[in-house]
Image 1 (cartoon, rainbow, N blue to C red):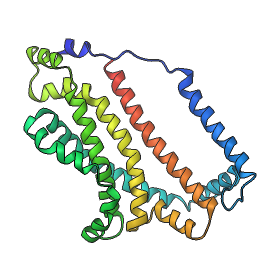
Image 2 (cartoon, rainbow, N blue to C red; image 1 turned 90 degrees about the horizontal axis):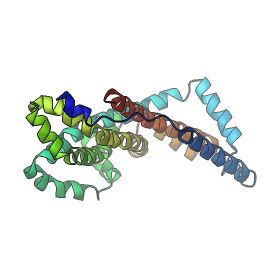
Image 3 (tube, one colour; image 1 turned 30 degrees about the vertical axis):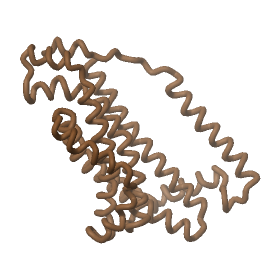
Image 4 (cartoon, rainbow, N blue to C red; image 1 turned 90 degrees about the vertical axis):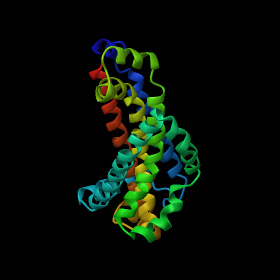
Length: 261
């Protein structure tokens, strides 16, 4: 079986300077454009980057922002975990079962046409206000992308490789553990990577609609008081949180590749 795994080892790739330089250049370009535009626009509409930075540093330093960040991150991570817990097994089952695939695939496709936020009123009536309906909303937003990427990852496995693994003695759990799961993991992690960023969106939207004590609620307060600097500071925090979660999954994918390299 180890010979089969070895045939699919991934070659290590060294980091290219463009991987680090390109995002940095893009960020600097955005900041320069923002600063130039802020110089000709009313600061109530578009505050300058320095003012937003001062506001953000101030709120982080006095810990006034941390409770809201913690609430949003908790909702997003809990929802993403719940969505993955249901989505990965279902996607796997659809990929290996023709009956389930023909039975559920049309309904999964139809479900993608329903905006998850449209379910918010129902979640309020079923679960109530607060964090729990927000977690459920995040789970729904994460669930279907993970089902689809898991399905694709398992479906696209090389059948000759799987047959060879079976001839080599792999069967049942060992086949899944040592052959199928490592090979399907990149697709699954891609779904998780996108799902985590979607869960941040779901958490904020859920707090807008269904209440809560997170950054979505704070955005509502700043919006109602026309506090543009505060709105921009919260948006930067949300972008940073989404980027960190994205990088976390990318790191896990890298370590997985390294373990089989």
